[in-house]
Image (cartoon, one colour):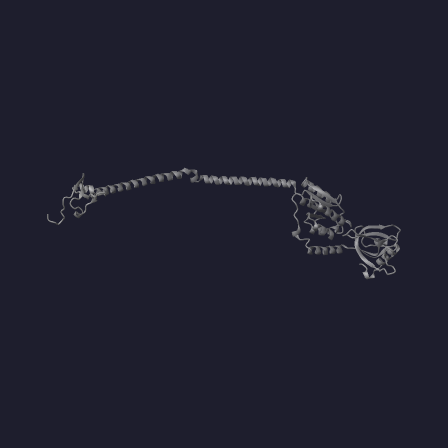
Length: 426
């Protein structure tokens, strides 16, 4: 709550402030005290970080800190409020206080004088966590699609945990047993109390900025709901969501479920489980490699055996067992067919030869030489400057025409002495 601006004291013309007319310290202190006094009584929520109750005094001094920011407020109250509280008040307790702010002009400090302190119960804390869970879920910070996969074998693992805690020992020992070469960048912070959130957020930002860190583990052992409150803080959840490096949340035991488990990329049930998820088991990986090698060798041997059987089956086939047998059988067929073809060709040639002889004999019988041999002659008219012409008519050979008479054994040259045409009287 703040006082309205209209209620703030305004300097009048008589009290105007300038380099020539400065206000004295007492005036400033008085004005600030008047301003703060206008705020009235208020309710404030925070976490107690310091309690100082001196015996025999009538005032107890406390420091109230904001769990989500590096801010605190001095508080004074009656020691009876602390002694008579229904729930023991200790450093780290979440409380709601009712009181009035006071400005001490002598020291220039502000203090909250409270008259009522109410511890925040578990039920109310859980209800607030559930409201924050719904808000972050509505913004998509729990979306599985935003989860980044963990590297198979990170070069460097960042670890945020309490100093000399069981969680730190579990993570380092288990990871070292599984993969001796693993390297850790450890950041020890408070893991409960009012300063835990700010320290964890700072360590997270430092490791996320380190280029060698490939995965960050946030580890803490089990505890009460109040002890685990820093890991359900909105500031830490948003810092985890903004990280570019995968984050593994290993807070508490299996039943514990702070909000950072939902925002982180991987939730581990325990710090030991986180170590198992971050680095592989060297023995298991070697056994797996040996198994893969054995399976690969067996598969190769089976493949070779299968292919050998296939080759044996192919070689056992007649065509491959005696490949020349088919050629030899075909060679016999070719020889038989060649002989049959030669016989047919000879028979055809013989038949054609006989036919040729018959035709030659007939041609010889019908030829001019045979006719001449029977006593006939061929008479040709001899014309100067040209080849002899066969005399076909007596009209073509007037008396005195030189003729060539061809007989069986040669030819004679004669001259026409006269002519005797068929049908005329001599």
